[in-house]
Length: 544
Image (cartoon, rainbow, N blue to C red; front, side, top):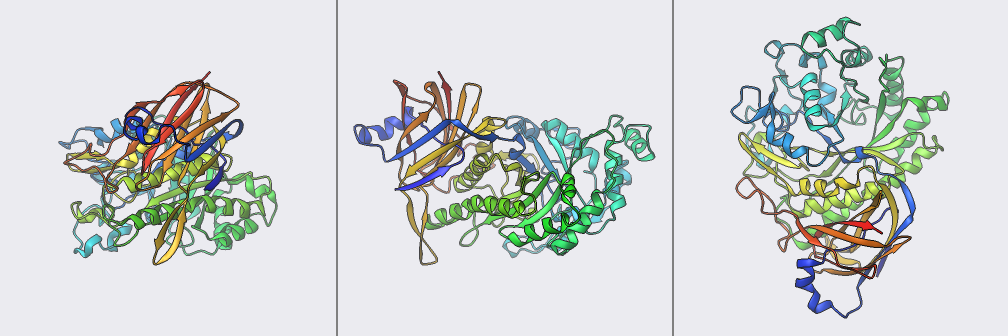
């Protein structure tokens, strides 16, 4: 029996149709798992920004994904794909990061302002990236950028979606002056400066009031090949004496790749060499981690062992958060700077039925949904450490929530997870303890193990939201749920699962994998629930 203490809860169950299916065999038997939810042991508020998104000028993300143009036959709102806006409003997107990614450090923001007809056409950063399946490159979104989607279009998109903008600035190929002038263009009042007058002349009289500014992207690689010490110097220079125009600017420093703890240690050591006051200019330290893929990197073709393998890789997020948090503490013992994970997700090869110039475009399967769920649960459990996360990416590439091509549009299983988990936003994360049998499998001929049941819980007023992932590919979990410090009056459940581990949505079958609703049986304040195999479950429990 694997016993895991989580710093935020996970719990209960889905009776109804699933109880009908599994109940006869299990009724009267002892449960094989237990979840304890410690209602009186809060961890911290789950920042809504943990449920953020990332869009980059890469493949079909911007052009044909988000931006179809105002004259397009595809239904749109001032050039933005309407179907995307409608679906985003269901998941309450708190923040959207743009324009990259590696593209950010080759982007000149002045190319994307002024009349669209006079904006220059530039080579996209990703032009030399070969399409998946070794097909020859073709003209398309990833080769040439027309700059018709620039700053004001991005702000328009954020406003339509109800999200805050997070702009990643160019540190590799533009000087610090261009950074603070971009801030001026966005945030200065109309009439105050020539740049704010340019914004007003384009139709945006009111300032954009952008708070989140990323100082570069991946400076250890495509963002300049800096050492941590070099980047710390650049960060200080780019953030020194930037006019705020009444906006509480929050600078985000570009942090490490995966488990590179030394990058974190050396950056903070150099940043604070002249005193702890330098920490005042850092809102968040941005970690990037992709759990990758398995086998031949096909998102909808994998073995059962590869199912488990990817989930183990995704679960590494837990240790990355704790190890970088401890590294930050060496120079920032009071933890004034919080963690941000502004790129995360699985990363498979592009699907053969998606346009080759979309690069890593694929529909995502039930396995990807579990990757998304266990990662969001990890962020919830570390609500005292993580203040923002941005899944990569929103549409048409990597760990996307949507796929689109011309007039075709569909949501992926990842979208359903974000919709199910939206109720956590702003809630108080609670400590929980999971006890469930661990799972044995093989990776490259070596024995491996994965926990069997995990999740998180949060409390908002009298509503307890519990999200639970059952990682077992074939076995359900009969689970007793114990609430310490509260009793449940009533509840409901939503479950995303399938007997087909490769289940996914497509343009032809957009509802092949969707969540189902069910009741939760509460008897004398006691809860016992059956979590289906290979499932993500959300319980909404009203406390007495």
